[in-house]
Length: 53
Image (cartoon, rainbow, N blue to C red):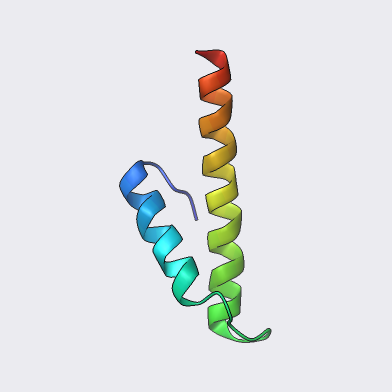
């Protein structure tokens, strides 16, 4: 999963909030893990962009 813009970031963040308490071993838990990784990468890339600016 890759987040490409602010709109996708907001949707992914909202979805992560919805399924935050998903139980391990469920499809929602797997989805949450993917969302959290994508959110972190987007945030890290954004901070890097700000530093380079």
